[in-house]
Length: 317
Image 1 (cartoon, rainbow, N blue to C red):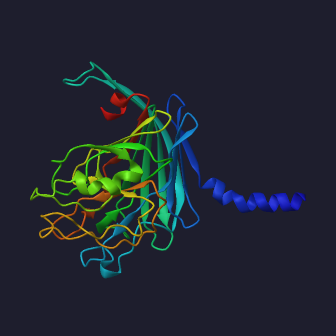
Image 2 (image 1 turned 30 degrees about the vertical axis):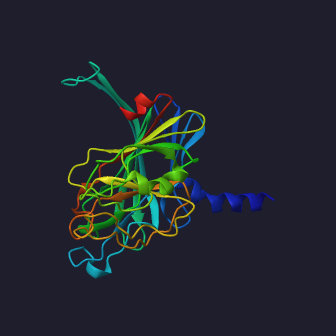
Image 3 (image 1 turned 45 degrees about the horizontal axis):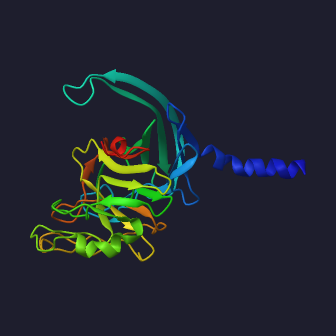
Protein backbone atom coordinates (compact mmCIF):
# COMPACT_ATOMS: atom_id res chain seq x y z
CA UNK A 1 0.00 0.00 0.00
CA UNK A 2 2.87 2.35 0.85
CA UNK A 3 4.51 1.65 -2.52
CA UNK A 4 1.20 2.39 -4.30
CA UNK A 5 0.80 5.70 -2.44
CA UNK A 6 4.36 6.67 -3.31
CA UNK A 7 3.73 5.82 -6.98
CA UNK A 8 0.61 8.02 -7.04
CA UNK A 9 2.47 10.90 -5.42
CA UNK A 10 5.24 10.68 -8.01
CA UNK A 11 2.68 10.48 -10.79
CA UNK A 12 0.81 13.58 -9.59
CA UNK A 13 3.90 15.62 -8.76
CA UNK A 14 4.31 17.19 -12.25
CA UNK A 15 0.62 18.16 -12.27
CA UNK A 16 0.85 19.74 -8.84
CA UNK A 17 4.03 21.60 -9.77
CA UNK A 18 2.33 23.02 -12.84
CA UNK A 19 -0.32 24.92 -10.82
CA UNK A 20 0.13 28.32 -9.19
CA UNK A 21 -2.20 30.39 -7.03
CA UNK A 22 -2.18 34.11 -6.26
CA UNK A 23 -4.68 36.04 -4.12
CA UNK A 24 -5.68 39.67 -3.85
CA UNK A 25 -4.20 41.78 -1.03
CA UNK A 26 -7.44 41.41 1.00
CA UNK A 27 -7.61 37.66 0.29
CA UNK A 28 -11.08 37.74 -1.34
CA UNK A 29 -9.99 37.17 -4.95
CA UNK A 30 -8.15 33.95 -5.80
CA UNK A 31 -6.62 33.18 -9.17
CA UNK A 32 -5.33 29.73 -10.11
CA UNK A 33 -3.14 29.17 -13.16
CA UNK A 34 -2.02 25.88 -14.71
CA UNK A 35 -1.70 23.97 -17.99
CA UNK A 36 -4.27 21.30 -18.85
CA UNK A 37 -3.65 17.84 -20.30
CA UNK A 38 -3.12 19.33 -23.78
CA UNK A 39 -0.64 21.89 -22.47
CA UNK A 40 -3.10 24.77 -22.84
CA UNK A 41 -2.57 27.68 -20.43
CA UNK A 42 -5.63 27.78 -18.15
CA UNK A 43 -6.83 30.05 -15.36
CA UNK A 44 -9.73 30.23 -12.90
CA UNK A 45 -10.87 33.06 -10.63
CA UNK A 46 -13.07 33.09 -7.52
CA UNK A 47 -14.39 35.84 -5.26
CA UNK A 48 -15.00 34.95 -1.62
CA UNK A 49 -15.00 31.29 -2.61
CA UNK A 50 -17.54 31.65 -5.44
CA UNK A 51 -16.63 31.16 -9.09
CA UNK A 52 -16.35 34.33 -11.16
CA UNK A 53 -14.43 32.83 -14.10
CA UNK A 54 -14.49 29.07 -14.56
CA UNK A 55 -11.56 27.21 -16.17
CA UNK A 56 -10.65 29.34 -19.21
CA UNK A 57 -7.91 28.89 -21.79
CA UNK A 58 -5.37 31.40 -23.06
CA UNK A 59 -3.46 31.57 -26.33
CA UNK A 60 -3.10 33.02 -29.82
CA UNK A 61 -3.61 31.70 -33.32
CA UNK A 62 -0.82 32.88 -35.63
CA UNK A 63 -1.21 33.57 -39.34
CA UNK A 64 0.60 31.38 -41.83
CA UNK A 65 2.22 34.21 -43.75
CA UNK A 66 5.49 34.71 -45.61
CA UNK A 67 6.40 37.58 -43.25
CA UNK A 68 6.21 35.41 -40.11
CA UNK A 69 9.27 33.78 -38.53
CA UNK A 70 8.18 30.34 -39.79
CA UNK A 71 6.49 31.62 -42.92
CA UNK A 72 3.76 29.41 -44.32
CA UNK A 73 4.72 26.74 -41.75
CA UNK A 74 3.77 29.02 -38.85
CA UNK A 75 2.25 27.29 -35.80
CA UNK A 76 -0.10 28.53 -33.08
CA UNK A 77 0.57 29.53 -29.49
CA UNK A 78 -2.41 27.57 -28.19
CA UNK A 79 -1.26 24.25 -26.75
CA UNK A 80 1.78 22.09 -25.97
CA UNK A 81 3.06 24.39 -23.21
CA UNK A 82 4.60 23.60 -19.86
CA UNK A 83 5.25 26.05 -17.04
CA UNK A 84 9.01 26.52 -16.78
CA UNK A 85 9.14 29.44 -14.37
CA UNK A 86 7.05 31.26 -11.78
CA UNK A 87 7.66 34.50 -9.90
CA UNK A 88 5.39 36.38 -7.52
CA UNK A 89 5.51 40.03 -6.53
CA UNK A 90 3.60 42.48 -4.35
CA UNK A 91 3.23 46.10 -5.41
CA UNK A 92 1.71 48.99 -3.47
CA UNK A 93 1.84 52.68 -4.36
CA UNK A 94 -0.41 55.71 -4.04
CA UNK A 95 -0.34 58.41 -6.69
CA UNK A 96 -2.11 61.69 -7.39
CA UNK A 97 -3.96 62.13 -10.71
CA UNK A 98 -3.91 65.49 -12.48
CA UNK A 99 -7.71 65.55 -12.25
CA UNK A 100 -10.51 63.13 -11.43
CA UNK A 101 -13.03 62.06 -8.82
CA UNK A 102 -10.46 61.29 -6.11
CA UNK A 103 -7.36 63.11 -4.93
CA UNK A 104 -5.29 59.92 -4.66
CA UNK A 105 -5.39 56.47 -6.26
CA UNK A 106 -3.92 53.37 -4.65
CA UNK A 107 -2.34 50.80 -6.98
CA UNK A 108 -2.08 47.67 -4.83
CA UNK A 109 -1.87 44.16 -6.26
CA UNK A 110 -0.20 40.76 -6.03
CA UNK A 111 1.38 39.56 -9.26
CA UNK A 112 2.17 36.20 -10.82
CA UNK A 113 4.65 36.00 -13.67
CA UNK A 114 4.34 32.60 -15.36
CA UNK A 115 6.90 31.58 -18.00
CA UNK A 116 5.70 28.96 -20.46
CA UNK A 117 7.73 27.00 -23.00
CA UNK A 118 6.15 25.30 -26.00
CA UNK A 119 7.95 22.00 -26.15
CA UNK A 120 7.63 21.38 -29.91
CA UNK A 121 8.96 24.80 -30.94
CA UNK A 122 11.02 26.01 -27.98
CA UNK A 123 9.05 29.26 -28.03
CA UNK A 124 8.66 31.13 -24.74
CA UNK A 125 5.61 33.15 -23.68
CA UNK A 126 5.17 34.97 -20.37
CA UNK A 127 1.67 35.44 -18.98
CA UNK A 128 1.49 38.09 -16.27
CA UNK A 129 -1.43 38.26 -13.82
CA UNK A 130 -2.11 41.14 -11.45
CA UNK A 131 -4.74 40.42 -8.80
CA UNK A 132 -6.43 43.36 -7.08
CA UNK A 133 -9.10 43.49 -4.36
CA UNK A 134 -11.68 44.24 -7.09
CA UNK A 135 -10.51 41.91 -9.86
CA UNK A 136 -7.57 40.86 -11.98
CA UNK A 137 -5.73 41.74 -15.17
CA UNK A 138 -3.64 39.54 -17.47
CA UNK A 139 -1.48 40.08 -20.51
CA UNK A 140 0.77 38.09 -22.82
CA UNK A 141 4.45 38.99 -23.08
CA UNK A 142 6.80 37.77 -25.80
CA UNK A 143 10.52 37.99 -24.97
CA UNK A 144 13.02 38.42 -27.78
CA UNK A 145 14.08 34.94 -28.88
CA UNK A 146 15.51 33.05 -31.83
CA UNK A 147 12.36 30.96 -32.44
CA UNK A 148 9.90 33.86 -32.24
CA UNK A 149 11.00 37.07 -33.90
CA UNK A 150 8.26 38.27 -36.26
CA UNK A 151 4.72 36.93 -36.00
CA UNK A 152 1.27 37.91 -37.23
CA UNK A 153 -1.83 37.42 -35.13
CA UNK A 154 -4.73 35.66 -36.82
CA UNK A 155 -6.79 35.73 -33.63
CA UNK A 156 -6.31 36.06 -29.90
CA UNK A 157 -8.12 33.32 -27.96
CA UNK A 158 -8.43 34.65 -24.43
CA UNK A 159 -11.42 33.03 -22.75
CA UNK A 160 -13.70 34.23 -19.95
CA UNK A 161 -15.89 31.27 -18.96
CA UNK A 162 -18.83 32.56 -16.96
CA UNK A 163 -20.37 30.54 -14.13
CA UNK A 164 -23.98 31.11 -15.24
CA UNK A 165 -26.46 32.77 -17.58
CA UNK A 166 -25.82 36.27 -16.27
CA UNK A 167 -27.81 39.40 -16.98
CA UNK A 168 -25.73 41.51 -19.37
CA UNK A 169 -25.63 45.11 -20.59
CA UNK A 170 -24.10 45.00 -24.07
CA UNK A 171 -23.57 46.64 -27.43
CA UNK A 172 -23.41 44.61 -30.67
CA UNK A 173 -19.86 43.68 -31.59
CA UNK A 174 -18.97 45.85 -34.57
CA UNK A 175 -15.65 46.67 -36.23
CA UNK A 176 -16.69 50.15 -37.33
CA UNK A 177 -19.30 51.76 -35.08
CA UNK A 178 -20.57 52.06 -31.53
CA UNK A 179 -23.68 53.96 -32.60
CA UNK A 180 -26.10 51.37 -31.23
CA UNK A 181 -28.35 51.27 -28.18
CA UNK A 182 -27.26 49.37 -25.10
CA UNK A 183 -29.16 46.10 -24.68
CA UNK A 184 -30.10 44.41 -21.40
CA UNK A 185 -30.62 40.64 -21.69
CA UNK A 186 -29.42 37.34 -20.32
CA UNK A 187 -26.35 35.96 -22.08
CA UNK A 188 -28.55 33.24 -23.53
CA UNK A 189 -30.72 35.87 -25.27
CA UNK A 190 -27.93 37.79 -27.05
CA UNK A 191 -28.31 35.78 -30.26
CA UNK A 192 -32.09 36.23 -30.27
CA UNK A 193 -31.84 40.00 -29.68
CA UNK A 194 -28.97 40.75 -32.08
CA UNK A 195 -31.03 41.38 -35.22
CA UNK A 196 -33.17 44.10 -33.62
CA UNK A 197 -30.24 45.48 -31.60
CA UNK A 198 -28.36 46.59 -34.72
CA UNK A 199 -29.21 49.65 -36.80
CA UNK A 200 -28.67 47.88 -40.11
CA UNK A 201 -29.30 51.07 -42.12
CA UNK A 202 -26.07 52.56 -40.76
CA UNK A 203 -23.54 52.38 -43.61
CA UNK A 204 -20.68 51.79 -41.14
CA UNK A 205 -22.07 48.58 -39.62
CA UNK A 206 -19.70 45.57 -39.63
CA UNK A 207 -21.14 43.03 -37.16
CA UNK A 208 -18.74 40.10 -36.89
CA UNK A 209 -20.93 37.51 -35.12
CA UNK A 210 -24.58 36.91 -34.15
CA UNK A 211 -23.29 36.67 -30.56
CA UNK A 212 -20.53 39.27 -30.72
CA UNK A 213 -20.46 42.09 -28.15
CA UNK A 214 -18.22 45.05 -27.48
CA UNK A 215 -16.06 45.73 -24.45
CA UNK A 216 -16.52 46.89 -21.79
CA UNK A 217 -19.16 44.25 -20.99
CA UNK A 218 -21.13 44.61 -17.76
CA UNK A 219 -22.90 41.59 -16.20
CA UNK A 220 -24.76 40.73 -13.00
CA UNK A 221 -25.07 37.29 -11.42
CA UNK A 222 -28.29 36.01 -9.84
CA UNK A 223 -26.83 36.57 -6.37
CA UNK A 224 -26.06 40.23 -7.08
CA UNK A 225 -22.37 40.22 -8.04
CA UNK A 226 -21.45 42.61 -10.86
CA UNK A 227 -18.75 41.49 -13.32
CA UNK A 228 -17.09 43.67 -15.93
CA UNK A 229 -14.76 42.51 -18.73
CA UNK A 230 -12.67 45.11 -20.51
CA UNK A 231 -9.18 45.94 -21.75
CA UNK A 232 -6.61 48.51 -20.66
CA UNK A 233 -3.42 50.10 -22.03
CA UNK A 234 -4.28 49.28 -25.64
CA UNK A 235 -1.28 50.60 -27.58
CA UNK A 236 -0.03 49.33 -30.95
CA UNK A 237 -2.54 46.49 -30.81
CA UNK A 238 -6.00 45.72 -32.19
CA UNK A 239 -8.96 46.54 -29.95
CA UNK A 240 -10.82 43.65 -28.34
CA UNK A 241 -14.42 42.53 -28.77
CA UNK A 242 -15.93 39.34 -27.32
CA UNK A 243 -17.61 36.44 -29.08
CA UNK A 244 -20.13 34.67 -26.84
CA UNK A 245 -20.29 30.90 -27.16
CA UNK A 246 -23.86 29.79 -26.48
CA UNK A 247 -25.77 26.51 -26.78
CA UNK A 248 -26.35 27.09 -30.51
CA UNK A 249 -22.73 27.84 -31.42
CA UNK A 250 -21.29 25.19 -33.75
CA UNK A 251 -18.05 26.97 -34.67
CA UNK A 252 -16.31 30.31 -34.25
CA UNK A 253 -17.70 32.98 -36.56
CA UNK A 254 -16.65 33.26 -40.19
CA UNK A 255 -19.44 35.64 -41.29
CA UNK A 256 -19.57 39.43 -41.35
CA UNK A 257 -22.85 41.34 -41.53
CA UNK A 258 -23.64 44.94 -42.40
CA UNK A 259 -23.15 47.44 -45.20
CA UNK A 260 -19.40 47.91 -44.72
CA UNK A 261 -18.56 44.24 -45.18
CA UNK A 262 -17.66 44.87 -48.81
CA UNK A 263 -14.46 46.55 -47.56
CA UNK A 264 -13.63 44.30 -44.61
CA UNK A 265 -12.59 40.63 -44.89
CA UNK A 266 -14.73 38.08 -43.05
CA UNK A 267 -13.21 36.36 -39.99
CA UNK A 268 -10.97 33.41 -40.85
CA UNK A 269 -11.88 29.85 -39.74
CA UNK A 270 -10.47 29.04 -36.31
CA UNK A 271 -8.21 26.12 -35.43
CA UNK A 272 -8.98 26.34 -31.70
CA UNK A 273 -11.39 23.92 -29.95
CA UNK A 274 -14.77 25.44 -29.14
CA UNK A 275 -15.22 26.16 -25.40
CA UNK A 276 -18.30 25.53 -23.27
CA UNK A 277 -21.47 27.69 -23.48
CA UNK A 278 -21.42 31.00 -21.58
CA UNK A 279 -17.76 31.48 -22.48
CA UNK A 280 -16.73 34.84 -23.91
CA UNK A 281 -13.72 34.69 -26.25
CA UNK A 282 -11.62 37.64 -27.37
CA UNK A 283 -12.12 38.73 -30.98
CA UNK A 284 -9.79 41.41 -32.32
CA UNK A 285 -10.55 44.10 -34.88
CA UNK A 286 -8.77 43.27 -38.18
CA UNK A 287 -6.80 45.41 -40.58
CA UNK A 288 -7.73 45.75 -44.25
CA UNK A 289 -6.26 42.31 -45.00
CA UNK A 290 -8.17 40.56 -42.21
CA UNK A 291 -5.16 40.07 -39.95
CA UNK A 292 -5.07 41.23 -36.34
CA UNK A 293 -1.55 42.53 -35.76
CA UNK A 294 2.05 42.36 -36.99
CA UNK A 295 4.34 41.86 -33.99
CA UNK A 296 8.08 41.87 -33.37
CA UNK A 297 9.58 40.61 -30.15
CA UNK A 298 10.05 41.83 -27.50
CA UNK A 299 6.44 42.95 -27.22
CA UNK A 300 3.28 42.47 -25.20
CA UNK A 301 -0.50 42.71 -25.48
CA UNK A 302 -2.81 45.13 -23.66
CA UNK A 303 -4.28 44.05 -20.32
CA UNK A 304 -7.40 41.86 -20.31
CA UNK A 305 -9.26 42.66 -17.10
CA UNK A 306 -12.11 41.19 -15.12
CA UNK A 307 -13.56 43.21 -12.26
CA UNK A 308 -16.21 42.24 -9.76
CA UNK A 309 -18.11 43.91 -6.93
CA UNK A 310 -21.51 44.42 -5.29
CA UNK A 311 -21.87 47.91 -6.75
CA UNK A 312 -22.32 48.48 -10.50
CA UNK A 313 -20.64 51.88 -10.29
CA UNK A 314 -17.52 50.24 -8.86
CA UNK A 315 -17.10 47.81 -11.77
CA UNK A 316 -18.17 50.13 -14.61
CA UNK A 317 -16.06 53.13 -13.58
